Length: 100
Image 1 (cartoon, one colour):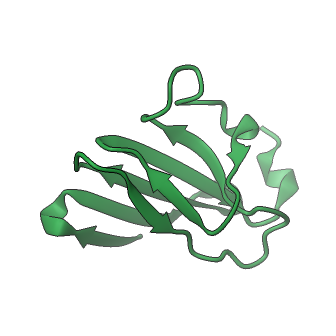
Image 2 (cartoon, one colour):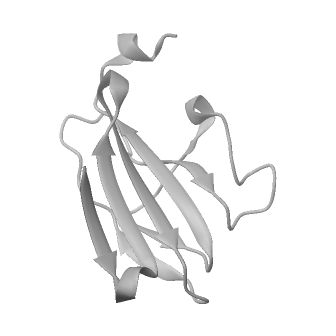
Protein backbone atom coordinates (compact mmCIF):
# COMPACT_ATOMS: atom_id res chain seq x y z
CA UNK A 1 0.00 0.00 0.00
CA UNK A 2 1.26 3.46 -0.86
CA UNK A 3 0.11 6.54 1.03
CA UNK A 4 0.61 10.20 0.32
CA UNK A 5 -0.07 12.60 3.19
CA UNK A 6 -0.55 16.29 2.47
CA UNK A 7 -1.19 19.42 4.54
CA UNK A 8 -0.46 17.96 7.98
CA UNK A 9 -2.64 14.85 7.48
CA UNK A 10 -5.76 16.84 6.69
CA UNK A 11 -5.89 15.09 3.31
CA UNK A 12 -4.91 11.45 2.92
CA UNK A 13 -4.58 9.67 -0.41
CA UNK A 14 -4.07 5.89 -0.46
CA UNK A 15 -3.58 3.33 -3.25
CA UNK A 16 -3.84 -0.39 -2.71
CA UNK A 17 -4.37 -3.53 -4.72
CA UNK A 18 -7.28 -5.64 -3.57
CA UNK A 19 -8.46 -9.15 -4.17
CA UNK A 20 -9.54 -10.30 -7.61
CA UNK A 21 -7.01 -8.08 -9.46
CA UNK A 22 -8.67 -4.77 -8.54
CA UNK A 23 -6.92 -1.52 -7.69
CA UNK A 24 -8.47 0.95 -5.23
CA UNK A 25 -7.76 4.60 -4.46
CA UNK A 26 -9.22 6.38 -1.42
CA UNK A 27 -9.35 10.12 -0.74
CA UNK A 28 -9.99 11.29 2.79
CA UNK A 29 -10.53 15.03 2.46
CA UNK A 30 -10.55 16.81 5.81
CA UNK A 31 -10.56 20.45 4.73
CA UNK A 32 -13.49 22.78 4.21
CA UNK A 33 -12.84 23.13 0.49
CA UNK A 34 -13.02 20.70 -2.43
CA UNK A 35 -9.76 19.31 -3.79
CA UNK A 36 -9.11 17.89 -7.24
CA UNK A 37 -6.94 14.77 -7.45
CA UNK A 38 -5.13 13.47 -10.52
CA UNK A 39 -5.92 9.80 -11.04
CA UNK A 40 -3.03 7.49 -11.85
CA UNK A 41 -3.14 5.48 -15.07
CA UNK A 42 -3.88 1.79 -14.59
CA UNK A 43 -2.26 -0.72 -16.93
CA UNK A 44 -4.33 -3.59 -18.31
CA UNK A 45 -7.75 -2.00 -17.82
CA UNK A 46 -10.62 -2.39 -20.24
CA UNK A 47 -12.32 1.02 -20.20
CA UNK A 48 -12.48 4.02 -17.99
CA UNK A 49 -10.71 2.69 -15.97
CA UNK A 50 -11.78 4.28 -12.66
CA UNK A 51 -15.28 3.83 -11.18
CA UNK A 52 -16.81 5.74 -8.24
CA UNK A 53 -17.91 3.34 -5.50
CA UNK A 54 -18.17 5.72 -2.50
CA UNK A 55 -18.34 9.51 -2.31
CA UNK A 56 -19.76 10.76 0.99
CA UNK A 57 -20.15 14.29 -0.40
CA UNK A 58 -22.95 13.10 -2.73
CA UNK A 59 -26.59 12.83 -1.67
CA UNK A 60 -28.00 9.42 -0.76
CA UNK A 61 -28.44 6.98 -2.49
CA UNK A 62 -25.61 8.07 -4.81
CA UNK A 63 -23.06 8.37 -1.98
CA UNK A 64 -22.52 4.61 -1.58
CA UNK A 65 -23.50 2.22 -4.37
CA UNK A 66 -23.07 -1.48 -5.03
CA UNK A 67 -19.53 -1.74 -6.40
CA UNK A 68 -20.70 -3.64 -9.49
CA UNK A 69 -22.90 -0.66 -10.40
CA UNK A 70 -20.29 2.02 -9.69
CA UNK A 71 -20.38 4.92 -12.14
CA UNK A 72 -17.40 5.40 -14.47
CA UNK A 73 -15.24 8.44 -13.78
CA UNK A 74 -14.63 10.53 -16.89
CA UNK A 75 -11.30 12.20 -17.35
CA UNK A 76 -8.08 11.79 -15.41
CA UNK A 77 -9.02 13.79 -12.29
CA UNK A 78 -11.63 13.52 -9.54
CA UNK A 79 -12.85 16.28 -7.25
CA UNK A 80 -13.37 15.27 -3.63
CA UNK A 81 -15.87 17.45 -1.82
CA UNK A 82 -15.12 19.11 1.52
CA UNK A 83 -15.05 16.83 4.57
CA UNK A 84 -15.62 13.70 2.47
CA UNK A 85 -14.33 10.20 1.79
CA UNK A 86 -14.07 8.87 -1.78
CA UNK A 87 -13.29 5.32 -2.90
CA UNK A 88 -12.65 4.64 -6.58
CA UNK A 89 -11.77 1.26 -8.06
CA UNK A 90 -10.46 -0.09 -11.33
CA UNK A 91 -10.55 -3.66 -12.57
CA UNK A 92 -7.39 -5.04 -14.09
CA UNK A 93 -9.44 -7.16 -16.48
CA UNK A 94 -9.92 -10.48 -14.66
CA UNK A 95 -13.69 -10.77 -15.27
CA UNK A 96 -13.94 -14.30 -13.90
CA UNK A 97 -12.67 -13.13 -10.51
CA UNK A 98 -15.66 -10.78 -10.14
CA UNK A 99 -18.23 -13.56 -10.28
CA UNK A 100 -19.00 -14.13 -6.61
